[in-house]
Image 1 (tube, rainbow, N blue to C red):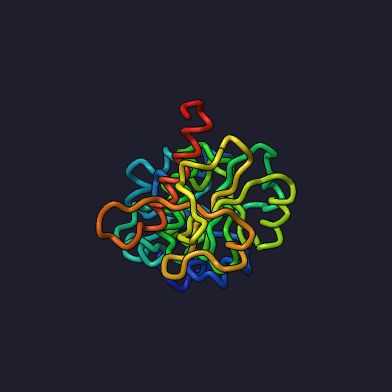
Image 2 (image 1 turned 90 degrees about the horizontal axis):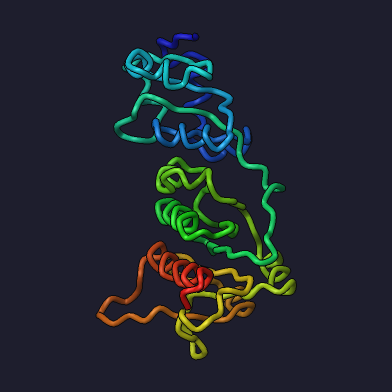
Length: 259
């Protein structure tokens, strides 16, 4: 067990540096905070390259809870400097980023594609809902919120480790899916938009949701069919996470034979 008492410690500075996206990308790793999230990652088969605990957490059950992994113990007064949360639970782990080559397309699958969704909370919510709805994976366009942001990971509530995720999926890859037989459905208001209940989601499908302010880009709209969720009140639109949930659960309903 290593005991860190100063912010000048090399391991401390390294973990803290991973708050920055640039450093995470350079190192190919990301951090996971909190008891549940770290447990979820380990239970999913991920192995932490570093595991740090506050002294108080280590002495009050942390040592036993994570007994299979060697830990760095950090002085309580400086532990918070490693974390993104305001009230850390006393444990943070470093994991390797996912191997994107392991993202396999199920030829009969259901996927959701996020086009420049900019808020990590929304992105995490979409990942969580896709997991709950039984989707095969979540794809992110270039320009989305950082997949490995601590806020994204937290908002996914553990689903981050239970569903296939792929970053930087461009329009050519979407086009290739369409050409291979997938139906592409964009949540968008246009002259030819159909109710979101019209498509047959029992077929291989990709549901596409767009940027909070600007929607889905024109290039993707040209590649896809357009569907809408009706609004009966005076709201102008739905939050992208909510809209994605409505669309995904309609697909899940159809897939489970309750059409």
